[in-house]
Image: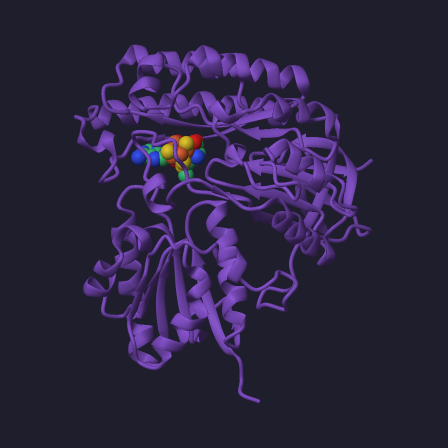
Length: 444
Ligand code: SAM
Ligand code: SF4
């Protein structure tokens, strides 16, 4: 028997890329690959890239520069670029980076086994199609003993991909393509196999996950609430989350599910981007600040203890100090438990990239002010947990000896020192202290 080949994947960006990396590793398992955590040992290196941040492509080219000595030392090493930079740059990557053997987009990575065989035979390949076939139909079933067969109690499951919203700043509709939803039966089957492998929490993923409208076994399109309801019936699956949502797709049934489905965790990432209606219009977000606030009110009425998380862009072209203050006002009104905030950066090919930008020093100053407010809110949300009893799913040993670390129902990091705990345990914990980025507790 030949020794297995080793695969090293470096993943950038969002949870959808984390999920895709797992599926790519499983697909290459069919070609005899096992995972390695060391690039130096690898027979194949894949960079699963993200195009959301500034200078994404340039960062990939610098990383390739760092990998060149490995390729010089081992001419049999194959290097591939996957993900959204691969989709956006395509054949340009082969031209600019001679160390790269293959370029594969997010919709064609099910073809990796054939591509790998072809590059082993001496080719250099690019595949950034948006093919008619569904990649999920061509990927190995998840119970296959892929290179990452041993896994933790929490898993991602992509149910929806792409986006038709075309926010004026965003590359996703271009790199991930039109919105598509996986059939409900396939999602349920994948969830079942994850649960059989010890998974107790599943986070449903999509660029616009609450737009989910997959075909149900009855032929009707199922919304996300219906899918969550069916998944909640799976014995052994204890927690369900979903991300990322658009405010415009928050159906009444989904809001109601937050009140009626105990397995749906009290945490919702619902980006608003700005509190100014003028900016929201310029961003093509298709909702107003007031509509967002009303929606938050309805969600909180369904689930009063829900923790709201969000994304913000400051310094969007045309943003004035008054627009920015409207964002601060909205943040103050919502009270976020967690949030991501970014300075606007132009993405080539998007409508906003053509517009004159805000003074960079001004944008930096606004970002600092917004982040200070969000940090205060996050610290307050953490502090409010002290003395409360919460559910915690333990995932791994903590940083100190004897500790186990996991996530609370509200997705906060919690650690507990107790010799009785093991990874995969779901326990009630009384929170005793709020530290900088985590909570400490004792078993209740
Ligand atoms: N689909 C989600 C939504 O509608 O909010 C998230 C998409 S994106 C992967 C994640 C976040 O990156 C966005 O919510 C936005 O705040 C930020 N982002 C996207 N494009 C950006 C840009 N050009 N400049 C700065 N931030 C950006
Ligand atoms: Fe991008 Fe999200 Fe807007 Fe779609 S809804 S274009 S993914 S920011």
